[in-house]
Image 1 (tube, rainbow, N blue to C red):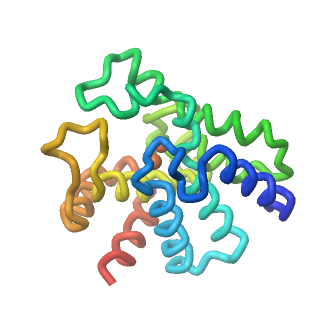
Image 2 (cartoon, rainbow, N blue to C red):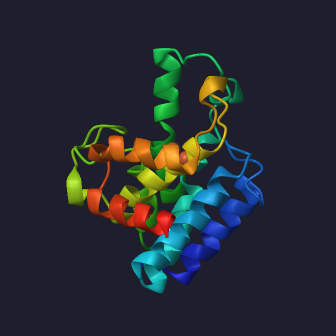
Length: 196
Ligand SMILES: [Fe+2]
Ligand SMILES: [Fe+2]
């Protein structure tokens, strides 16, 4: 269980490195804040306890912290990324994990969740870890589709302009189409929550 002292360390980290409203983050359009709010809403929908809800909220707020050291020219590139640039982007879950592990938290649920937020249900995705299905930490499985949902419903810099943002309906359709990437039961609950 993530302890009070852990949250104090995370608060200091967020304040210094990410800025109060995430303005220093890779996505200064509020992606982290919205993802955190959506994760909290989902946790309430699922009836998760206060502890898990809080861990999920913090993990969402910090999930892309590993993009901070990555050059803006790569993060904001509008053209297709080169393979080398794509590898740099793919390093962001590990970057965040390493940053949070250096804070010496008593519980690793939040860093572990963040480490796995781009791992697909079948173990593909990144980072390349030998883990799949329900063995992927719950926080990572939830972050995975809520991250995609927010990214798709808001404009992103490194997508061609035509694909900038999808409507919630189109996004749900796309998530269903790619459902094999996600925890099917949790994704179904997420869609139920959105359509309520
Ligand atoms: Fe990410
Ligand atoms: Fe993200």
